[in-house]
View (spheres, rainbow, N blue to C red):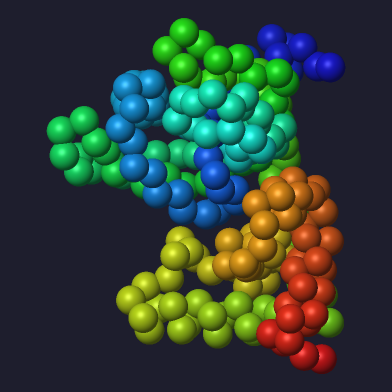
Length: 210
């Protein structure tokens, strides 16, 4: 494995925020933070202008319990955009998903916070969606339009309907599929393959047709 001390794509001690959800690059993440370890993490990230690692739980809970905690090996950097104090000791934190990463063995510190050596994954290549998937692109545009008419889209602008990876990621946020399926789609290196799998799912469910 590449030495994190010499690899420019590595992070030697990335703090992790385990979630029962999968964050995608370019997606918004809303957190309600009240545990001391995560309040400290938010403060440190704001002070040092650093991102933290949002990573899905394979087993266990982010709140301390008896069940062993297992984390997925691929996550997404989360950059804090806004913090509001809901009440004393409780923060509402809005983040934006950035670059994906892979981790080595995670370590839990004395205060309960998880961290790990991490290696950044290159951003998706910007590739146009195949012509055969025009219906999937159009359906996403229609879905966003419907959400906006109801009070606002959950997706940050600009919308990139000419980018297969962006389209696939936004669909993955909307689809009612398992966390395991979302995790596998997020970790796929080929954005056009990710979009192809989304297209097959939508056609299989009758959401779009040829």
